[in-house]
Image (cartoon, rainbow, N blue to C red; front, side):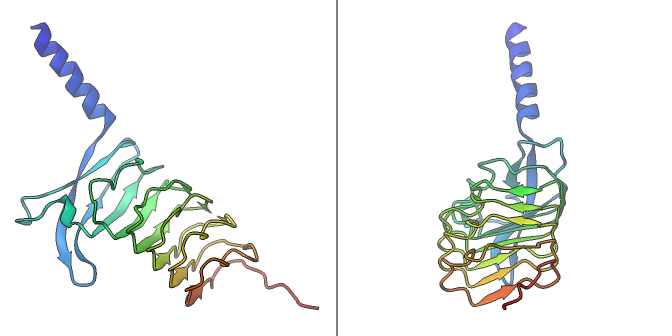
Length: 199
């Protein structure tokens, strides 16, 4: 009897510790095989992403190239939320509320694309993208960004395109893109940036 009770207590504690969210898996014409997760709630502080393996045969977590989280509400991402997807190259977070500060190294060095759109993101910190030398596209359009640390992009030596359209940015450090030697396209329109007058 006590053994069963102990098992029940452990099971209940585990369910409170992390909530598994099923990720709908499919092949995308543009991005390859990946999975989409919706409706993460604020109560799911330590949520996990679980691929619905029955939907697609002969596919495992290591086959996932991209992950998309959308239509959700969370304050932070668990530190190792993407760890199981060892070959993931692209992450997209769309139409999500509550997530305001990006200053934690969530992303693996293999990441080539990060897209965050229509979120509550306000601040891009110094440790948002450390070591992401493979990143080629960073798209942060239509969020609420008003602060970008001067070293936020320092490791993005191969980034080709940075987009921060439709935010609330007023100023950027003069040398913020100094290390982005392959940067070809920079989009900053629909912000509050004031152009300095040269005398």
